[in-house]
Length: 473
Image (cartoon, rainbow, N blue to C red; front, side, top):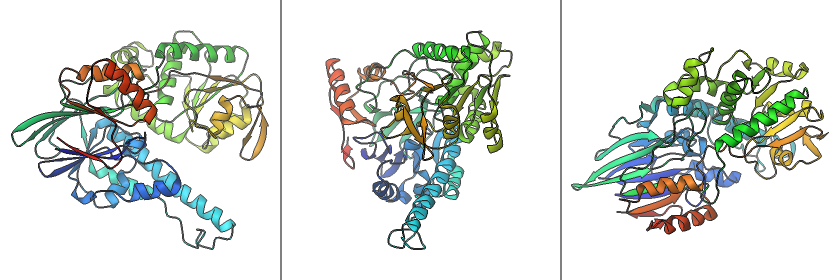
């Protein structure tokens, strides 16, 4: 058995691990590498292996850093099954189409910019057209290769491997991958964590912990950080929304369309039903979030017991639907929100306030001191979301300067990734049998901190592999 680390090695992006067993090849995840434009183009378009020789892909979940390079894999000659949970297959199809649209729009923007600088009629600085990494049509072709699986259903992706998917508790449909491998009459178990979730997240079941693995391939994104109890985030959300509505303002929330938006809708639904916040309109204004929410509603099999009980007893019999909730579909519906003056909650993408409809809501509400802009996730440097989180007094939106008079509130503890304690619990579950642990999907500081803590627990043979290295065992 040989495993090669072709992505998410010493970084958190582009998850991609190639397993070779009995002369057959299986790819775990096919994530999109996100980085500087030229490096991204080269890494995503040029695979360090022959895609035509890969006999199957197992996809841990739908996030683009795990699924987003599937269109290029298919373009490059892969035409075999992509195994994933039913919810992941459904959600990944939506997200890949959206990603293809973004790739096309980005390429057109660069070409237009270069034309404006005298780069020639074809767009590029040397007169050549900049091509998208892949198109929406490329993304559409991936769907026919998905093989949806139930959790805990055995399947054989390549000869010699019996696989099953277990709940990872990260986003809808997310899975850890259990591989029981027989090679030369020798049996071993490889456990791939995917992205590990947290206990007590809204909607989702808790992560399934490793069970007797020989080898553990494990993410370490937050190996150096502790996360607050999700209940604290719920309490903070209730307090911020409550005080804003009480003074007659709007709550504007830049939120990622998949996962974060649905969690917030569910939380707000509970608060309104329990009378903890005023009954006001709640608007989800993001095409991707609207479509993703519909997929969430179609997969109640992924919900935890608390959510199923809530749905059973709720008068709407819905987790993500209630009488005050509106999912906007058209641009006209979105624009109409700007003319409404009554208190309300608006959730819109993007999560870092860089693109999308959220920009219109921010520019129309940022100068009103009654309103609150609520930041609910980490904001990358040099984004509008970071400038808002830093409480800058002036910000630019669509090139115009706005005075920030609205309150800015931030809530931590909403990450869908397990923090250090959850990661340690996950690794400790493997301790009785595990021979080697490989840490991926994390920066060096996170891996080093987690490695130190794991060593204190008595775990040994922990590796943090370099990109394009391979291990045989």
